Length: 274
Image (cartoon, rainbow, N blue to C red; front, side, top):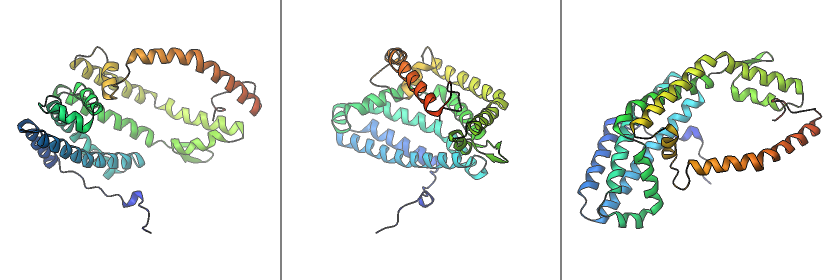
């Protein structure tokens, strides 16, 4: 029996920037000059193989950065990929536009399915060369947020804990311990409220600017394209919210009252829910 693969065994190769972009350009050219369906299908399959490589590396460096946001090597690898992402996104959109416009579309739909085309239609609506600067800025802000929270060291009971580390005390059977842990956690957020507010404000500005550059009224419309919402829209979510208020909130209220009785408190506080 072979030994199980651990995360430490995973060592994907970092993609070479110029090589990856050149492969993308070659695949786009192949799609545009394809004279039959088979050549077009092979180009799409080659593009899929390329993106499997890229997204494997993306997931790897992103996870390692989340594991240790203060590690300079991991931060540098994550930043290198972030500088590559906008160029990749632009080429990816160009390739998908060519696929959507292909004279062999019917054969492509038969091979890859209509849903793939619905997803790609969302993708091309969400990206354009005009917003590459916004995407770069957005990625940097997101990484700053991850580093801010990932680097948290919360003093509690004589030890400093990360945000996930202090969570264990929010489930303690001693209510005083739970309260102290929750207050310590939120004190960390409160002390950094100016930084968090600035990050949120800057993200709103970048995302709104990107949405308007693409012709959307608000980022909500662009957000639905980014999330590849092919089968429901904002109006459907509004209806779901109304149903939650009508059906789920009363149920949760009853469950909370039952929980309060079980643990012997008059009413639940934030440190009681876990």
